[in-house]
Image (cartoon, rainbow, N blue to C red):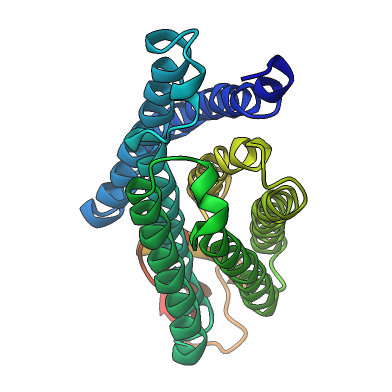
Length: 318
């Protein structure tokens, strides 16, 4: 195989694997931070743990593929034309990671939207479609022995269909989160600050992953004969997992506001109606107590937010 062909095929793929490994380091850091800082339910922790395990496989499979091509079969151009099983499985790992992240966001949309079932069903349906295309893509990649066969069969169509579903789901999830977060704004400054931060995360996460998907589709259509699109596709799973972890880890600055099933006394004001003397002439030690009790439930983790404020005003004898 010519040197110029290696530059935009396995050279590009190698760059994608290296970039993915670097982003995996960020994933490990964020995962460690999450498990040491938050006491969420075992379900959510298992969810994050499953995503981290998929990320390990997502780095290990392409690393094996690169080792197979450039070390084991060094100087063997014929081997470069064959698709290894690990390179094929990495495509399925990417799809499964994206589905787990989408299902997490679907649950958040469900609570933020006050149980908007039709919207959540659409997100879940798109996630299932994406999983189906990923499984089909992986199965076809394993079945077909050579890269050149991908263009002649349904693999290319599955890649483009999967990417189109990615883009639609990214914009739908980001738009839904931003809309319902904006609708939940209150007059409390620190609450609005946290909501604004979450909206920025939602926009950035959706935009970055959507742009990556669009770039993969564009390179796949414009240059189907090389692996530049596969190099970009290699980092998509990292982007999804890091977006979820960044959203979870963004809770720390706002943990006092939305602590899990916490109840706090916001205000306790005492207004004295006299200095040992009462204007009513009945009890000189009467004082008025105003208490605002605010209950809030975590919406960033795995529980539903249900905030309410009760005002209690009474006159007590001291």
